[in-house]
Length: 265
Image 1 (cartoon, helix red, strand yellow):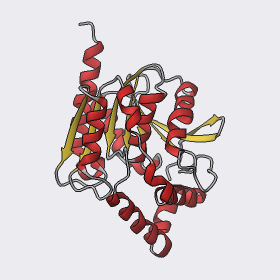
Image 2 (cartoon, rainbow, N blue to C red; image 1 turned 90 degrees about the horizontal axis):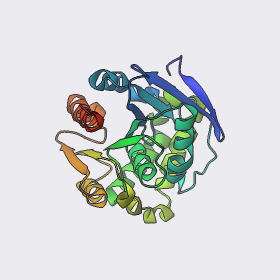
Image 3 (cartoon, rainbow, N blue to C red; image 1 turned 90 degrees about the vertical axis):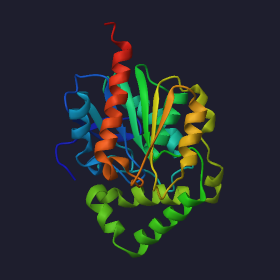
Image 4 (spheres, one colour; image 1 turned 60 degrees about the vertical axis):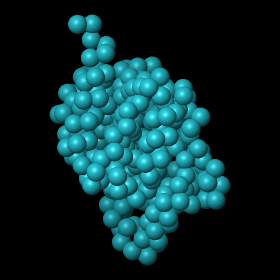
């Protein structure tokens, strides 16, 4: 894990975060990581995104991930709702973030959609999702079950421990056990989509092992005319890793469009 990351003292415990690029350049791009991610697992993407857009980029590790405070297990089925409605707004207030765009991967994309539809902070200007989910599909459950087996019997736990340290079980079990809970089959975010009134870029890889194009179609249909879809060929569950240039170009154009909308000239 990278040294030098900062921590914010929030009501539910410390949150690890790190700035990339010029934090004074807005809108701030707020990165929301996947179900097994953290600040450091974004690797080079935040620096590349800051360079491509000219904006400051903020990445943070949710509770139970990276060097943030641990979480209690089992996580509640509502864990993404809780992060979107409580933790994310508090972090934005704590850091004094004004105009911002949420950029979320997988669970992070789902959290971004909930936040934008139910708890948007002042200054929210847009949402980018990469491989977000709004409902459960069989392919998602099968892939997570396979990951759970790899965590229990293979080297996945050791690989993740390099990034999550003492939080490794919070990170993995909190994610996998929630998704594999039979009650999670009823999890659905479609109610939040019509309340999103900012532009949305909805991205997904054509070869995503955790979800189908139905996720993208559902998000775009729910949000309406301000949402645009981008399906990336030769791309799995992580567009920023599998198709980094196409991902940077798409987000760069999306951010430029939002900035142009507010430019009086």
